[in-house]
Each structure stands twice: as structure tokens, then as C-alpha cells.
Amino acid sequence: MLATAALAGCSAGTEGTPYPVETAATAASQSAKAAQLPQRPAELTLQNVDLCDVLPQVQLDALKITSVPREAPEPDGPVCVFDADGAEPMHSYHVGAVAADLDQWITGARKKNSMTTVPQNIGGYPALTNYRAAGDPADCETLVGVARGQTLTVQTFAITRGKLTQPQLCEMSAHAADLALQSLKSRN
Image (cartoon, rainbow, N blue to C red):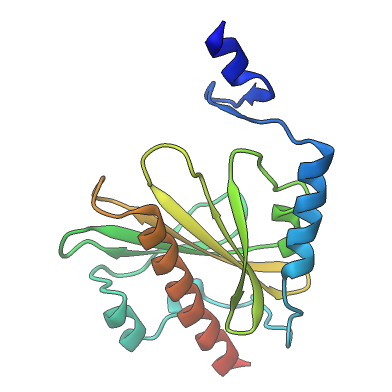
């Protein structure tokens, strides 16, 4: 009986993990999140940008990248993987370009009830921190609205389990996103 009461108002995800069902109040709070985002100061297109070249060597060193950046297949668009696997805690950055407006992760088709989404400001651009609050921290994604219909994504994955906290993963992701954004600004 107690377990039933604890799960009231939840729904099962694809993995069978309960997550809150969106209510009208939740929808209003999501719209309020969208309103917190700053206006984009300029359009920084991701078209014809080689994502494996978006971080100069000095930034790769600062992020402790030890492997050659490599392209990875991704259903949402191009992605480049940067591994920091030379020392513990090992982690990886996946830098991608998605053809979608940033608000899609708050109120649109890309919004997931199982994810925590927090508005941010990265280098003056509207951004979101997106992560799963439940379970072991495995990753954190920073989404930056760089142009209309274009979002830069930087997802930090923990390769070594249990060595990085969720706040650390999110801070690392936001830092890498800021470095990638600086590089994009210098090119435009």
C-alpha cells in the first residue's frame, strides 16, 4: 500500500523507471524556465563547422584531452568525441550540433520528464544544463542556442564510474561548452 502511494503521480519510462507525470503547474514552470533564458546576442551558425576542430590544441590541453578527436555517429546530427582517458577520473566530451531550437528541450518535442533542465547563460548565449538527477551520475549535457534552429551540445560522460559527482560533470560540460563557444565566436 505504501509503495502504491509513493508512486502515485508517476509514470513508467522506457526502462521501467518511474518519473513524474507533467501537470499544468509543471508546464507553467517549464514556460517560466524558457522565459529565464537570455536573448542570443548574435547568430553563430554550426553549418560547415568541423566539430572535431572546434577546440584548439590549447583548449584540448586545458580539458586534459589525451586522444585524437573522432567523429561518432549520432541520430541528431554530427558529433565529435574528445576523450580524457590518460589519468583518473577518465571522462569524455561529446560535442554535437543539433538542428533544433533550444526551447525544444524545455517545452517542445525534446523535453523529457525524467531529465532535470536548468536555464544557464554560457558566454552571453541562452543555454541549458540537462541531466538525469536519479541514479549514479553518468553524464551531464550543456545545450547552447547558438543560432535559430541550431543548438551546440556538449555532453560530458564519466568513463570511470563513481569518481565524478553530478555537479562536477555539469561544471565540466559547461566549461567545455564555453570553450567551444569562444572558438565559434572567433571564427565568425
